Amino acid sequence: LESKIADLLTDRSKISLGEVLKVYPIENGLEEIITYISIASKSNLHQIQAAEKEQVAWKLEKSGQEKTIVLPKVIFIKE
Image 1 (tube, rainbow, N blue to C red):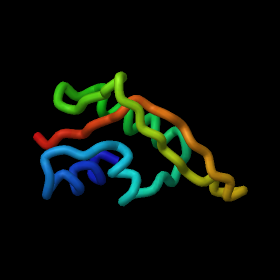
Image 2: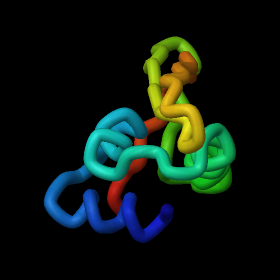
Image 3: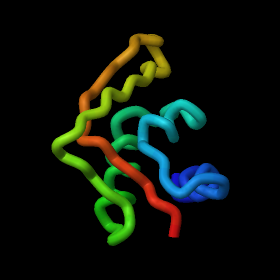
Image 4: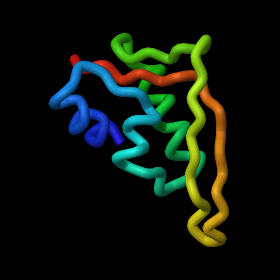
């Protein structure tokens, strides 16, 4: 997931989690979303903006059912 973020940051200075997921849709459900948040929380550079919210959607692989979650806005910033 870190390589996906780095790839998108090659031509911009920052990108939100929502923007990342438009290019690289979620493949592994909620676990993947948690991992993205973990990447942001372990960095002094990236930001988790609790005052702003972002809705994230994904489809369950087996049933095709769409799930959504509202998260604090996550911003990944280029080093």
